[in-house]
Image (cartoon, rainbow, N blue to C red):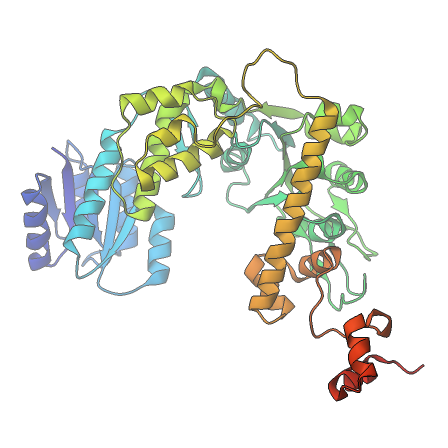
Length: 489
């Protein structure tokens, strides 16, 4: 029988919640103050779920939350409050609260929440290491390879040196980087991830290293780069294999001297940043091909962590499925769907070319649709990992595929930019905010794809044949438009 502790100094509220939960078969204990709740937490067996009022007569609810979790870190604490307090909700979640409910209590919401967290405790996998990171990500290890990786992280994290993290796309390189930061002496400082492949080459240098006023047209004030913003913290350079060689040299200077020059700067900037780098490309091959500097590779790979693909650590499929399921069910307020034997067999037979990212998407679709066939072949056949006995595809075919992908990506990107500009009536700053990119990136990409505002004047040489006919016919509107386009020297 699941155990619940209700902490509230309102007798009517206490009686109401207790009767409601006991009618559903829960074992309920109660406390009218923070001190009484702490005494209850030390009694065995400890409650699995705690319902905690934010306002208590002897201490603040947030203080009680911290002290309860210090006594029972595994307990699920659901806070509730009479007042609408967004800042308090955020603070409670940061301190470890599992959920936050408003008074007056909605019966269905309360019962769903308690059932959900009790189900989490009942579905815990023995022999599985699962560490929470930032409230949304977690590191899970069940296979010998990942257990060894966790031990390596424990040893490497306190040593303040660069780390190179490699592995296929979707294996969890960012999660490993967060785990390194969490166990390092910089854990109280900022962790910042930069995707080197997502920022245009012309902007990457200014984003990483910043610029001084007057460095280029429009730079009226200086701006600190990501390295300065992350001073005394940890920065993850994701997809570092895509970094241009020119910037690799500047990054090498940061690694060697912990200082660099901003764009247009005359004085060096000194920073204290731990650099982690992640890539899914074969760095040694990139070095041989001249796409990656050998000296930078040696600097970054002082410590090297390799994350194996999911198909090589199938012991983690079931516990990871359960973790994703209960987190998504909590997020979307849906009941947890069970893992049947047939579904588990289908998971074990699939090769998971998209690794953990693919598993996450499959679980999300299963939660919503409840269709077990999505597990067997969620994305259709995957020739890249099918064992047909043939060799790898020819280099020319791979090159053609890359060209197709780049073209399709460009078309989709251009369409998204044009759509955002039209929705914001061609206000570029608003469009950049809608797309989640900086203003300069929008200008750069608009020029790259030839996206021009309809308000921009058309030069005389670009006058269309139709417009010429209208002018010849004496159309007053066409004549006026033509005059506006003519620039007198």
